[in-house]
Length: 161
Image (cartoon, rainbow, N blue to C red; front, side):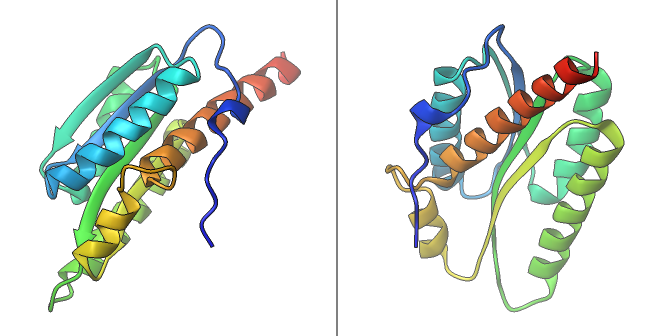
């Protein structure tokens, strides 16, 4: 059962925050809807710097995330938005598996939260439903997770200093 996120209950990121959003160029209408909802929630909760990068596909996300954390040390979180549609070949599994594995590796190595909202679907209608202009849009979930992780890291840092 779907549950809407209460945006007003998310932590306010006082002092601002910096978030990079990586978008796959595949299925731009769907990814664009995810991005719009994501950015609206980030701004509503105090993120004052959003840098968007459009990439050839989701397989490029781990490399791009690695480059971002190296060249933009002030980044607080990275959000990845894309759609991978299953076809008749093993290509789908390869892309999804490598994207997830690579993003986890970069996140752990860099100690920067990376939120993966790459939608692996067997029917395009499933991705469209998850990017609908409603409170269940997965871009909202990605933003909420980023906000909560940034807030958690700040609280953790406050306790250890």
